[in-house]
Image (cartoon, rainbow, N blue to C red):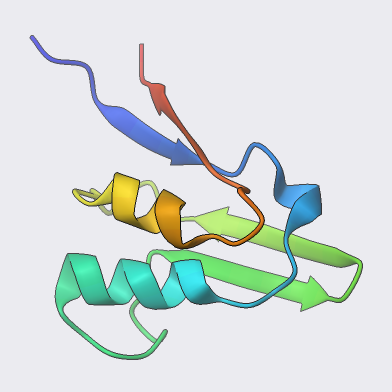
Length: 80
């Protein structure tokens, strides 16, 4: 049985609020342009952004989402 991979914002304090991860998640997971249906949300203001990930939505393209982040905020963990 394969372990489920989870996207985690392990370096959330580095987030600059560019929302590229939100756009990538919408594009790669749902083939949509925009952030409305993204499973990732960025909230806050400069110096204090919060990254929220909807774990109810399965992400298949985690590597692409991680690669687009200019601040390297994300990691992948195996769910136990």
